[in-house]
Amino acid sequence: MSGPQLAIIADDLTGALDSSAPFAGRGLRVTVALGAEHLALALAAQPDVIAVTTGSREIPADAATDAVRRAVAGLPAVRIFKKVDSRLKGHVAAELDPIPFRRALMAPAIPEFGRIVRGGCLMGFGVPVPIPVATSLGRHAAQAEIPDTETAEQMRAALEGTSADLLIGARGLAEALAVQMTGRAAGAPATLPGPAALFVIGSRDPITLEQVARLREAGGFLHVDAPNGTPDRSLPDADRLLVQAQPGAAPASGHEVGVHLACAVAPLLRPGMGTALLTGGATAEAVLRHRAVPFLTIRGECLPGLVASDAGGLTIVTKSGGFGTDDSLIRLAGLIGEEG
Image (cartoon, rainbow, N blue to C red):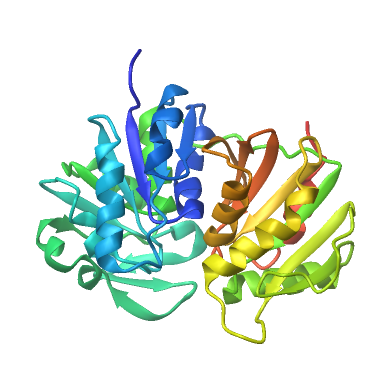
């Protein structure tokens, strides 16, 4: 039995998924472990690409380092893709400390979303002030190439021209690597079963909030507010249901909100129910952990940045808070039940 060709280590679940999807959409078998403790099960599925979430974006830096160290220890000897947030949130430098490498290609841009690197700075959509990329790398900057990546063509050229043994980036670099590994310029879109659509919104990112506002304007969904993740009324078994976390009377962490949402929607998540959208990494992780799902099998993207997976008999779609266009949720709703 041959091992995987690539391992992806991400600091949250949606990041692991959106960086894995380009490979699945091009015919490779991809599994994503929900933590280092589940890597053995995910590897037993014999994937071409293995990914793991360390759940480390919002924990202290030293704990994030330890989480990545456990992930590295659970992987076979294979090339590593360190997935970072495309706006460089989290503990980028601390999470590189446990990864042995000589030279890295650092390319966090996603040109397709208008998020680019120019002159060593990350800028564009969702980045109000340019961010010096080298600063996020700390002491590792001395070992890193930080090329301009304003287009997909530049991203592919940077990948082709590097001798780096470690790749650091986001969906844009993953897309270029998937093309390189498979020779396929484009991936096949994933289809989504009906009849029902359950949208669970844990993210408070302004990009997601605008997407929800547009969906509500379009109509067709029953909307239920969930202060700190706890719905303000019982959830009906509706064909089109949107459950959205709102700020509560007291502050709550993203983890707490996700756990509350997971408990609330659990009775509606039945095999064959249709498709569930989980927005926000903490929300997605909480829902899947509540269902004791050890790993996901990735089907690919249904829309750019929206990833479809098989999860213990369920079809789920995940979306990072800062991903997508204003009409992404409207378009997603139109795809559910339209299987070819």
